[in-house]
Length: 425
Image (cartoon, rainbow, N blue to C red; front, side, top):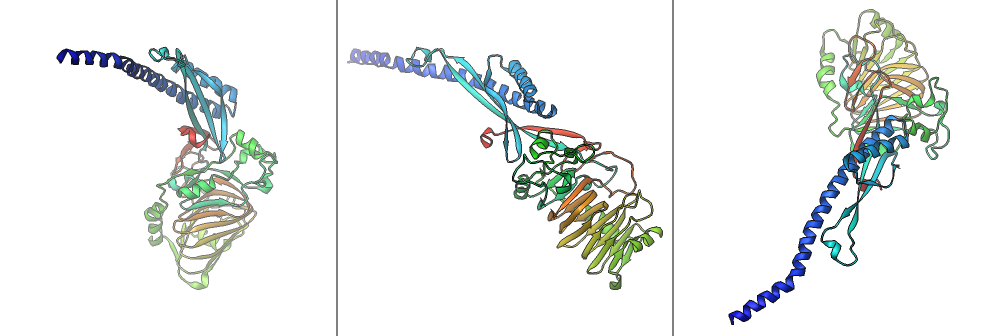
């Protein structure tokens, strides 16, 4: 009986030998394939980052980008090659550098099975998103960092006429028929950020050094002259109100107005107060009307603060160049409206609990806008970031805010980061 059992075991073992060899082959070859794939994926990731960075820094030179990518492939995996030439993909106004690599991997055991062969091909793909980052420009020496961005809106941002031909990006754009934006746009709500990112916001450089050149949106995009909004899910806009504005409202040096008969504030009255050394005006009355028709005289290195709990109209047609900048602080929870008719406004607008709407009729805006809710621009305007919230001035400097950091006026940097390729292709 025992001999019969021993014979059965031998027969069973003989029958299992092919299956055991197949299993061993799978373990060895699959392990080898995984090791090669990991190395290939690392090479693809490195090539995508290197190529994306080279593409951005070269102003859109794809050949240069591919040369950099090839160099990184050679260094990280000499046996790998491009499955297809790397390319730039555009999706939702965003740009991606896509790399797909291939490699032949030898098989050691599985090659003895029919129709498998001595080696097999594996591939790995990587995708790098290229984002243009433009530094905050202007006087950022010591100002509250929240104002180092051009626009900071917790709930959303919209510019009605960001470009003049939203349905055809190959039609030439004219600066007189669209808006330009020089400075960081930061949005705190993810859904609103996604909506804003579908639009195109042109930098003033798109229209040349004289501002009179024409360009298409596609050409401006290739040159990096578009302003890409940034998302900040932890954005908090009330800290300046808590740290500074509340102290200004209660300070003994603040000029407080409670008489409702003084609800109309014009440039002459501001000039009068400025000549008396007033730096902060607090209007604690309803339905304030502000009408600026000329620059405010006084120390131009110090802003004139206007704080109000309720404002009915803010109209400006003034050329404020050479005058005192204005920091207007709206404490209300509703909508603040700024109506412009040409001219140049210099100052910051802060509405930590409300929304800011601007009828920007071809006016030039130097400053920053911060809103706890939304910012909406209604027409055409030209916006250049400045930070006037500091007392004192000192020329262009470096600043870091909710949206990024940078040095000087008009400096450009690029953010290149890996993203899931399935979201692009």
